[in-house]
Length: 311
Picture 1 (cartoon, rainbow, N blue to C red):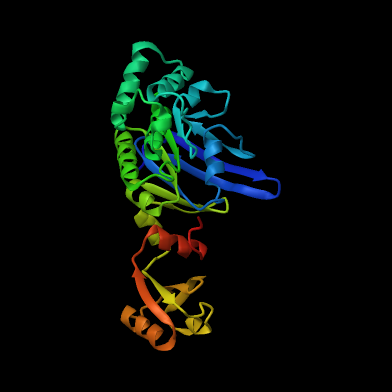
Picture 2: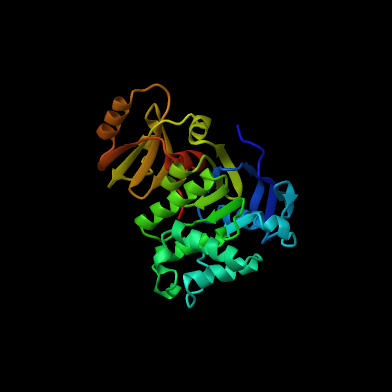
């Protein structure tokens, strides 16, 4: 059971002309929780994040942090919030230390206290040996790590990470995820948005799947899979027509997505899996490969939306 929430998002809505980007979205984050907001581009994730961080006003609903409503004019509330955006917001011509010193001063920090915090953060992400180097000489992964430090400089109670591992190498990704887990263990509430399904599975205590501005499902992985009574998916690949009507006539299978030379099928009922696979191979010419996929966020997304996760 969640302790008293640090963050509550209450029935927020936002439209841009005729497009309703966010439709009655609600969720809460507790201390020490990593909460995943998962969905493709255009799903409503970024709009939700902007409303939650006070950079955009909702048309309806509200967001509270520690019981206080957030807005651009409430510095006390915003001081509890750290934001690491998709875009890397560092100054290339400054050193890592000067970047963090500049950001810390925006929060009213200074002197030995700020210097100590900078040392602590750079050591935490493994950049202490490059603290005096211009950021222009950093790799993309190093800049992402410095970006994380900038969101943490003022010790926020709530951290919003919007696609924090976008475009970085696997080693840098693993290091960043490790640091996020450590922050949560210290009591920080983390909102984590991502395209990378395996990240959400490995790091998030709870996940909300959002598409077209609507939360389709929310809960732990076990809860999400129970919500849709999910079984394995059968995925076919090959030189066949995915619109073949035979697929609709196999008892015990339901077509859940069709792509060029690929189709995903959900076993339904009590038919044994070997019999279903045999029927497919015998009656569908051109099949080059069959894969049976265990329940994952990817297959769950297909179950809920009828299509692959769009990039």
